[in-house]
Image (cartoon, rainbow, N blue to C red; front, side, top):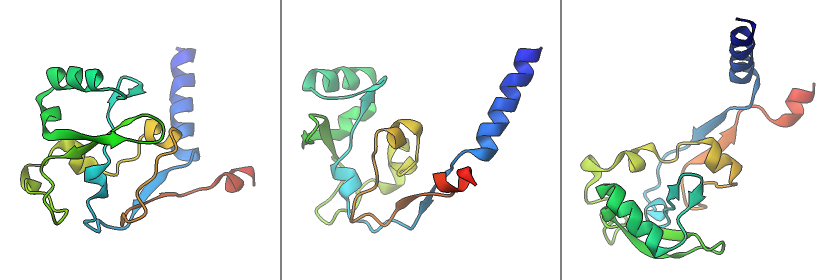
Length: 135
């Protein structure tokens, strides 16, 4: 019983007193988020073609992406096949949940240091910085 109370208190403390991330802005339709996609298997980024083939066997949605190259950390970058020459989605109405959620902030992305692209109209903003916690 005491353990449950502790867990509830911890949950609500973190919910109300920790930093929150907010998304500001709107899409500029630059297409960078559709050309530089990374995927994860459990807690690791996909870094080789064998892992990508495994993902495609696991879920058909990965057939909508082509390998576009690698970043400087050796992580595979993917390009959506639905992107046209004008950086517009040809299947916008039927786009995947993955695309609809961009740029959702989750702990794995935040802790990995990922941010939106320079050309992106979205910006990730913290609503309470660390200095304010010290006061």
